[in-house]
Image (tube, rainbow, N blue to C red):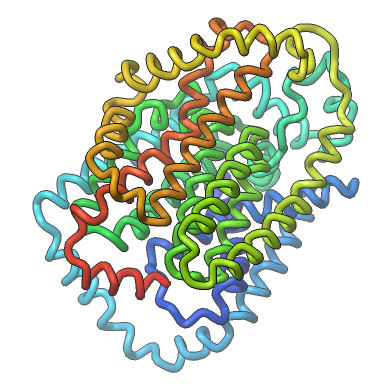
Amino acid sequence: MILVRLIMSQLVFVLFGGFLHTLLFRRSKSRIPFWERGGVIYLLGLGGLGFCLFLIGFLGMRLTLGIILILAFLAGAGWIVLRRSEIKGLFEKRHTTSRFLPQRLGKLRTVSCVEMMLLGGLLVNVALQFQYTFGLPMMGFDSRAHWALKSKILHHEKTFYSESFYDSERIHPQVRHPLLLPITQVVVTQSLGVYDDRLMKLPFFLIFVSLLFLMYSELRRYYSRATALCFLLLLATLPQFATPTDGGITSGYADAPMALYFLCTMIFFVRWLQLGNLVHLSLAALFAIFTMYFKDEGIGYVVSAMGALLLSLLVFKKGAWGKKILMLLLFIGLMILFLCPAKIYSNSLSVGKGEYFESILNLRSVRKNIGQLAQILSSYRLEMIFNLPHWGILWIFLIFSMIYNVKRFRVQEVLFVGLTLLFSLCVLTVIFIVLPWDLAQFFAGSLGRLILHLSLIAVYLIALLWKERMSENSESLKLANHDSS
């Protein structure tokens, strides 16, 4: 029975994501790869349902199982209505489906030994993450005392206007962080009827798998199957990303999910730059909103992406660049509007007293930390270049790729992603400067987890930098771009 309830809890996300995906692509005639569609549907569903539940809670309604089921029913009904013609056609042509399985098996027989080895390594990593999800409890301090505590309060009290969120003696010091992560965990616990800190980690595992689907589809636009799997394996096996503790994807922290949604934002912004389709801009805007609702740092990263995008449009002035800027400014306004409820709620929360509750805009701390800018930059160097147990050769490979392929920055999307990474690193530096805490102590426990925010973008930038040198041929690239438009 628990297994059935657990599956149903994830079906809620799928229904909501399917509705949003169909709503966005209902007028699009392009062919969307199966892997991409599956990944995007789940990611959209988790973020979209969590956002809707936040708005419901913001309006003072209780987050009960009944509310979740009503939203799931409405989303499922809307999905069926939007795809009724396709469903009807499926039943009319069901005699043609018998050839589907042999065709797919025929494609599987063409997989080379190298591809099988890469795929095997990827599946081993996925199996490890599955084991971490259900085999290990939440072990990090923040995952238990911050995120899991909030989800536990929401599970039992079903509102974030309870005394537990306003009493500084009962809640974690960083009370003002967004609530998208705890809300998605509550969807699982409410469906189960019990609070279980292992089972409620299932969405972490599934968004990881969904990202692999989306990233593989994106890489296949540029590369052969083997090369795409190589880059995918580089992303999936990053030690800091794959660890079950300290901010890893299944650790219970919000860092890896936020980084994952930020990567999705970048992927669809790049597609919008390349193809100019409004649906890609809409998807990027949605993923940007979800990024900001995972952690406050996401706001800075999204602002960095917006600045880099505007700058790349002004530098290249390709096509209808003026119209693109107006469209982007419109979507920026909509994103600010969607962010307002979260900021209104967080500002309503009381801030306690003591070291951890001290305002981050303390001028004394800012003056002290500006004097430690050299220490901050040195810490970056030690963490990113020399901390091989955290990052392997990721950052070394990135530096080499940028130097060896420096001319690739003449391409609009490459410049955009590179500037976003640079601006995001500057945002991280500003955060360190305004923090009221001792930097040496803070870096010892948290620097790797915060650098993780940028690591997935680094992998994507590496893939874009090598595109011309490693892609199969220009004609296949054009066909891939056409198919995924």
